[in-house]
Length: 91
Image (cartoon, rainbow, N blue to C red; front, side):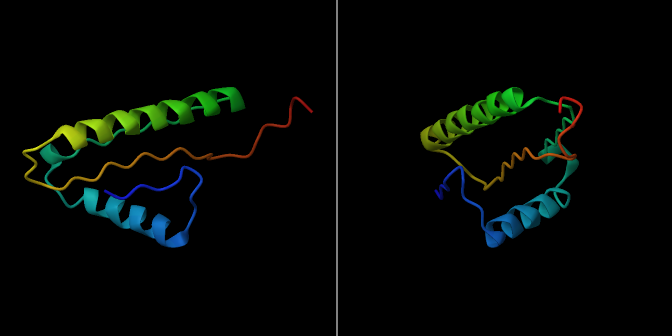
């Protein structure tokens, strides 16, 4: 298993995630689960969501570690990033 620091930022790492995302569309539709949420959030909510993602990934890793009968390799990608610039109306 490969782990990266939560603050890790490297172009090769981002390229790997991009390739994996592209491959998601090659599999059979019944073998993928693709979800998306687009919403306006505050900095406080952003911090809470980041913590939820960290906890979720930790739970997934525990499930994987406990699995002794795996027969395939899967990729799970979670991304949280802004689609817009901060609103200046409070300034």
